[in-house]
Image 1: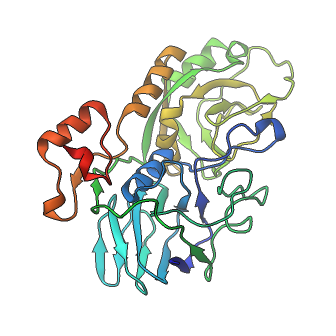
Image 2: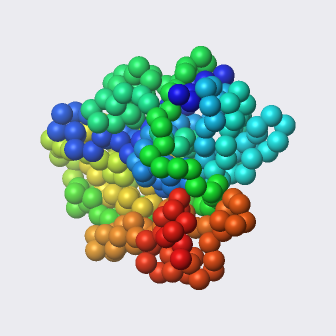
Length: 342
């Protein structure tokens, strides 16, 4: 059985998948990949299900060696230099790491979170139906922790015969600025008109004290018109909470399940990956949309194919222009099944 040996890595490398939805009532955060788009794209390139676990890297590099056989891999998300020996490998592309070879993924040039998927997925026991690491709770990942040198990550066999190596158009990442769409939060009426105008009319800066639990922002304080104490209530990623100092924070993948700070607004789901890839010091602005628009944007994002093809492996296996046009029309193409390209 093929395995990936962790030769070296930094402290912020861990397994993450689509997370643990539906367990907030038990006090367990959803967790999962900070950039779900990058997760699903990496998995699409190697033929996995969209939510399969992958290695998430933040502010770090990693070196992996194939043991026991070849491994088909893909790296997406924050762009980073990828090398096998002295040769560079394209980003947002599937590639094969032969038995005994070593691949190095450098720290990202821009953005924060880089994802590495392996065909077949990692043979790590799920905890509460997910392999995602929730570090504060010590669950998921590898024995409740992130990766470390010496770990041997076994790969499960692929469900189907390997298809041609595929490459996708890179997703543009601007780690210095983001415009995020929001809907009004449950405690929106508690805030003054000046606070509402500030949230939507001014820029905020992403602070250094930001992590997978919350991104802290600084800028014009958001003042409450009423200062009555709140009863702690349910929270979820995307919520913009406002502590007593008026400086907003946006809850992220590992956020707590209940909280007592008022929620002035909610970042819509399709824009959370944009925020996740911002670096400290980035300029953040907010635009308001209504719930119907948020739902429409989510449906549109879900209907788009995971991969926009720009290159494939053997020339004889390349899809025709007509087949690509067909795929773009009804999204029924299977990247790993050439029979669906016609």
